[in-house]
Image (cartoon, rainbow, N blue to C red; front, side, top):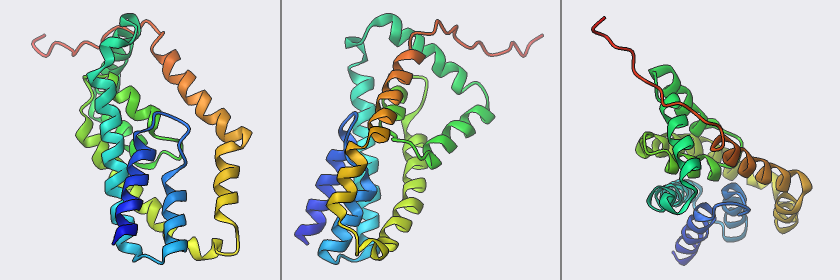
Length: 191
């Protein structure tokens, strides 16, 4: 039972960190291989802990966005109005949170800053997508048994490509906030 609690805590912490945390899948595979935990229980714990962590991360950015440069926050908020201007845009946004192969930390940070974007649907989409991906990682973990997981995680976190992706995502989020977005105005239906 303690291994499940420890796994949940580690996964939660990895998902609260704004950048450069190990991917949740690697934590799940580590616990799956080293502690022989029940796979469905571990997946459920992983999804719940990761979703809670990302929710706290987004909430933190939403709550403390007044500590960020006001012009940047305004631009991000205006960008958010474009992301929710139609059901098609909203669906695409939900799909991004569901299937994005990229680190979701910056997605949740940006969503947290954009108050026009409701967090609950994003968290639900994230949980659904992660249920599928975590299931594939945990069930495929036996194939990795011959590989040193610590070496695999270390290579992932310290690889130039992984670092470059994290930096690019952070820079991308900052750059989106530097664009002078005009708020999207709903069309007047009375004309």
